[in-house]
Image (cartoon, rainbow, N blue to C red; front, side, top):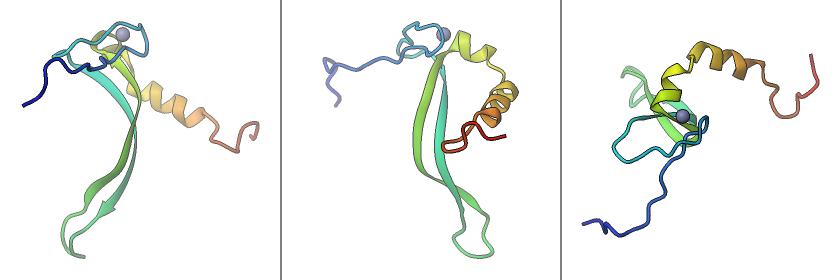
Length: 87
Ligand SMILES: [Zn+2]
């Protein structure tokens, strides 16, 4: 049984800073390291998540306004480590 008096840190929206209360849906942008795996050469491929790091959590109001295509475009335009300033 879980101790109800245990201090639990609530998520805060990474956009508007609003606290995200228990029981409320929120959006999470996660950097995950994954690989395709197969039990046998003929079985269906599955995705195995090795590690998942939350980059930002957004409250439902902010997250629902987020455009995934814009986010993907921003990420693709960002230089990766060691490539800053290259064209
Ligand atoms: Zn928000």
